[in-house]
Length: 372
Image 1 (cartoon, rainbow, N blue to C red):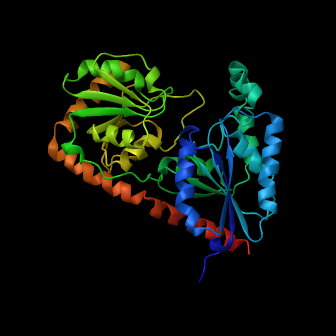
Image 2: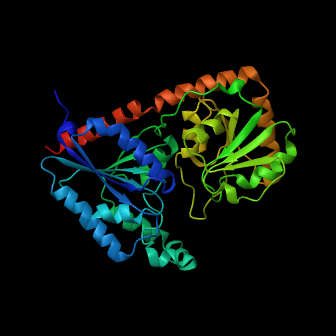
Image 3: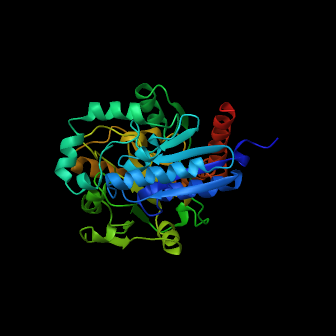
């Protein structure tokens, strides 16, 4: 029997590709689910903070038109993250008889700055003056206007954090989709090097590069890649690769034995439990990871090829000592690297496009069936 989804229109509201990790993530999900959907329409949003109030109204109307013109059953899915004002308000007015789901990327909340329009984005201090002291009001606004009734959450701790705050949501935990990447050299046969990777922003651990370089043997190379890394301060003995795509990305991961993620506190607004797109990319290349236990990173470390530093010290110098010890323990132990590489391959299969698409589509099919 054909599924309800195979005869339905799916409207996806998501950032443009290249707009942070969420935009890239959304494209991977769209590519994975498209073959299972009758029709898939995309409404792409720009950078958080790009939109005026008038822009938000126009986007809401455009999304509403996609829903209203569906020739048959219709379902809406949106990607929600900390500053996703266009996605949050663009779906808020969808009528109650249309099933709506969301992937909530920064749990426990669907959005952390619900009124960060272009004006507030251009006035940073005012944005925080509005949102920080009014957090209780912000949470009430979300409970009142959050249109999705089903929330996909990408981490175990994120799912646990969101349920008590939004008890009306049907919370579905799914793995972070792992992008399709070519098989490369196993980690134990790669050069004696570690890597840092990803978009540069506060809390990603790039400030540890100089301390870590000082504590590792000179012949353990440190390579750094990702958008914005070319603007990092230069450190002797650290190779800054910059943004990488395609064959350059393949070559970067083939040149490191492990990816290091010494993440720490990012925001005074409270702890969030997002999945890591950086870790998902390491998994796509079969690369073991060394990370702190910050937020949802603490979910890892149970036979998945990830070395988690539990109770990671907050002092930067103490943290650098611990990270350097874990790096040496892993990159110079061929048996440990081989085992970690096999474990990461298991995570790669679990997060494959086919496996993740099956989870999304089964949930959407149930949502459509329940509305009949």
